[in-house]
Image (cartoon, rainbow over the protein chains, first blue to last red):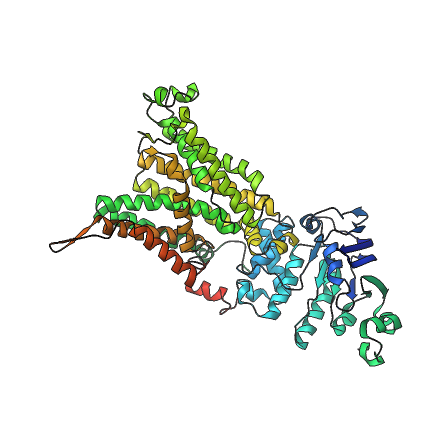
Length: 251
Length: 352
């Protein structure tokens, strides 16, 4: 690792308003190195806005973001990425006219590696994710599932202390989800990073997260272990509606 | 995974896209040098100089995705700088009396003067880029046009130094087909090394997706500034070559019609790849030459037959329209010359 790893990515009292609409109000969130933290909530709860704030793409209206206690709220997205916060996007946003290896190498170069070392790192990650055979494929020739996996791999190529994954499993079939769960669960140990996982697929969330943070209408609703969250009546009401039954959240 | 020592095949695969461009160009030079007439040879040299210029333009436009209308500026800066240093020692004190004494009263040897001129063009591109590379998209393109207009107005009116809009004549003409070929090969190699380097990958990523590039730690501003500066050096070299091939320099030859012709070459070939830049120059030069000859008149049997004047421009415009309608990414469609196997690999038809 070329730069010292960070231990904590914290949001304190983060509020974001788009005109009159409050996307987030007063959210506290702490992501620690070595854990997988799930971020869930109904559509429009502010999950993606939270990721945008943490990765510097959205300036918070009030509140602060800090990395190991250093305020990074004023930094640009690029500076935050270089400080060790990697992210993927809901739409894969790959560099489509470039090869898979080049997509990863760009992020590795962004983290300060030379071209040669960047390529080595890219191939290492692709090898681990079982994508190395597709290293020379142009991204506009990839299948949907591969696109999603490459976008995660690219976030990892940045050598992040924290990887923020925005709905990595959306649109994947069951087998692909299973494989993805294995990958995500292994990230903290393998890359020494903390993972923030936004996902609608409860099986994935319950399967890989140590802690879960629930947002609803831009506010924190609950935080706790998967078991606590499954039992939490407020979460059931907000997330699943009044008619939620015991079986809906149980896996 | 590859071993540390690069095998011959790996090196061959890396350089194939360059060789596939350079070797045909060399063959053209050899064949026309042996069998071609004088006018064909002239066309070939002009084509090679255009390759230097358009490949230089491509280094910025192709890699960043931002159309630049301003690159003729840096050509003009280099061409004039070279003229001031090497032209007509006897006449300079009269025709360009405003030059500083070290330029006015002596000539500077050809090679150092060429190097200085190219450096000046690159320096001007860097300074311009410091300001306008902060802009994105259309704003950046339009601002390059503004740069072109500023230079044109200044040089057209700075009579005591540039002779205004009159031509400076009598530059030493040292550009041969082989020198032009050497410079074209040099430009192609530099452009290729750049686009495969870390800097090249970074700027191509910003072309594909600015947001994802920022999330990958890439600076839009710096990666574009580097490309713009390098591109300025390269078109500067083209400007020097053109000046010392024609022997004259005139500010109006570095203005809109030239800018559009250079962009047409890039767009027809496909601005997404180095091969596109080179192929575009070759195709457009060939078309211009053919129709210029037809306009000039040919004799079929006893009949003298010619196309009306202006046909050539119309045909080029129509051809560009056809390309934009039916093959909007240009002839090469953003791809380099590759071995068939490599192309299949990129399309995902071969694994590993």
